[in-house]
Length: 282
Image 1: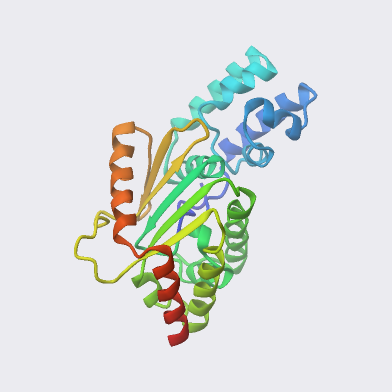
Image 2 (image 1 turned 180 degrees about the horizontal axis):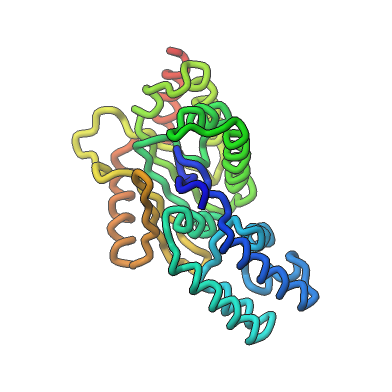
């Protein structure tokens, strides 16, 4: 892949690889041969039309259940072709492909948790903050890359609006706001954005105060998602590395830690009060 950084916080969303584009083209050809539109095919395989479109465009890693579900709709031969293609993709799993798998899980999630100590979660970043992040990326990005990555991140944020029945919870370190990445104007826009998003009934934002002696997040950021069939997944990132966590015992550990973090952070009302205070001080 051309870009090996991810799109959860400070990184860039990976460029579609040739192998993912090929898989998507095969899926599209099989679907069209069956005389089905994306809108007709999607509910039959129990995914959204938007998710199917991104898989066909090579922008999302195909979920493990896709070949089987597609085989039920398109026929057993089509299912076997897609299963073989998907197996080849998984042998090449790296940072970008892990993120693309996570992005697919994120789009279908009925519950999404995020704890961040590195940067504001990508789903909560206003445009000014996004640009400030990408303009400070190393290696440097071209203007074209900044524009493309900014658009991609803003597109991902439609999840908050398009999934009103998904419960979103975010725990964010106060230090990320105190840092004032991009300067006071960017931080003012960021705080206003957080206050606005926090008014949504499906979104909870909590700030972890600077002083918290019993802090449970010392091992770093974490993301958790519950699928429509009530299976939980975890996702973590580091410098040019990432991990999609699927083992139930490991995910259980992250859920325990996230539950403790929520109890240690300011509640939603206290968070609003702190954000308004910080906004007034800028």
